[in-house]
Length: 334
Image 1: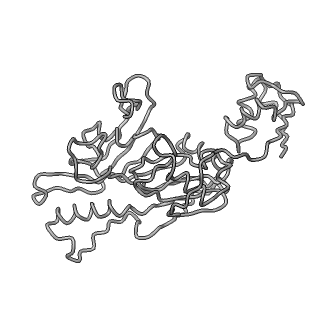
Image 2: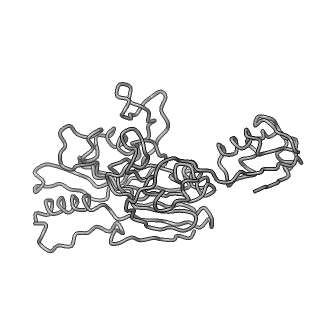
Image 3: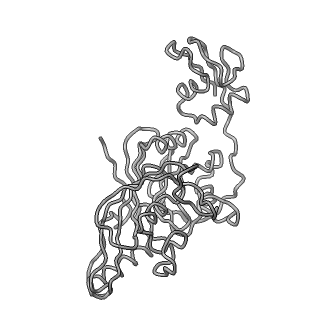
């Protein structure tokens, strides 16, 4: 496929690599750089370096190569809970315990392997279309791009905070009011498998939280827990877990950042609840909601029963309104 554009005079003095990102918005900067280095992009018929500056009115011709296989991972028939899909993207509800990307000790049985089986064309998209991660033991909604163009759009939405991700988290302690945690996150100074809030070398991170439900009182024998809604402005590794632990409200069940000896739950009690984004093809604002995993729903029911001094089987309907009575897709128009 060949595309040609004329450089507007307004771009006079602009570096070629910066101009390409504007003139060919459907492709990522990394992909455009690779094509430029490989000679697939010409300026007035000649190969230019990315740092060269344009004068305006040049003709840029991009002869884009056919799709090539981006991964050697093998497809595996692993069940997926699909919330929504079309020819541009797939929205899934990831179960706890499923690793997202193959890595050391997890070469098989990952979400990436499952996606390659469900949609074989994803072999031609970087990382099989995955644009963000969830920890192995975190459940919830994830977006996957079916084309390189859709992947570029979704990544840019995450980078500019145009896409919104919201979580529910069960934490230790009584949270009295809403708040925001701001603090750079980087590798732990001594334990390189962990993340930490750091002064030097980390990346800025912002987490907003508000109280959804409290668990305490006489029936809880002095123990307190809080169910929070968390909204991310950034997407750093382990961000919610690190930020909430920093304000002395670690996630229930978090073996890495939580309370020592916490055996109340077998994993961190964290669920990616809601995702809002602009559809990469139509631009329409869409919102997707993922049902909470059964183990976390059961944990909340147990806590409600204990707090309210009743039994689990007394017929009381205590499902909370997280839109998790079945899968729901909400289309929101501004």
